[in-house]
Length: 465
Image (tube, rainbow, N blue to C red):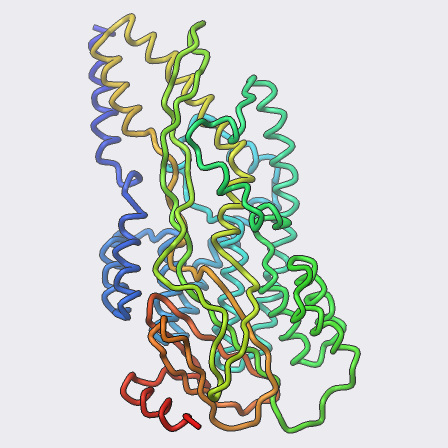
């Protein structure tokens, strides 16, 4: 009787797991959403996002994606509201961490729960980029005071993350030693190790501090006349991206008297592409199960870079080409996050597989059918977590110029559709943000507007010498 009950329970578990919404393919959903975005059909992308998130309890990723799509649409208030909801979720996470860091680390390090069924809390770089993107929304309407608030929040969030990760890494090392798990990601045969060991990944100080975020902070503080606060922002940006003339010049210029010229100090921010996807790859590992060394296929996450948007390093401004300075790569940050997380992922995945193998052997001995059912359930559960903020821009590049007040035209390379953005310069300091996906350009706010294709051609012809 007990054996039959166990069999029924195992079969029921397998059936429930197979239909569990937690096992939805988030990557597939966002591939289709992003296809609409790259074609410039933001409404279709938003409709699909709502369709795939029809339940009442929206998760963090929903608000991440919705905020970015509404920003592309030009609905800055709607974008800020969606990201405000995301910020509340991240804020609750911060409160939980600050209230009892040790308890949080213990819960997150649980070996029993598969990573992909945990509540999604966002990667560290996503939490930091959230407030950076919110600051850009506010700067699009020249709200420098509001942007200052978001920037301050960014710095506070970085401090919480830094303290948490230090404790988490120490605890993970102790647990790995206790469990006898010595496997490293470099030991995984068939795993794309070089992607995690690439120079642009290894050179990052961590996965969450962005040179762009800190440079933007410096620019905002400088615009508000707070040069003593601008200096640390520029200095940190230069530390994160050494040997970058733009960053070094910004710091040096703070020591010079403020310009009395009528021209404006303009920061043009060009964000392109999409954040990389996460996929799952199976690697066979030898694990000690019930006294035997058993080759067990385990799933680990890998990073798949976005290829929707051609690389570029210049833009035209009033028919003159200007070099852009790269200050952020979401692909590199994502890889660095995975590189740092892999020891914990390997530890949790291995211990879970060993526990599952022991339990399945016990079931096989008492009831082969129950053992089979548990094997089915295990196969359904096996798989790496592929959730990540996919509409987040990949590359962020900037150019800073002195520009006369009035109307100007920004032109993207022909490989990106040659789009023209009409820019209105009116303030002493301004931030103009342009978003490029595929060959589509998006701009929002009071001072930037994408010119329709037919009009863009006319503008380009008028600008010819």
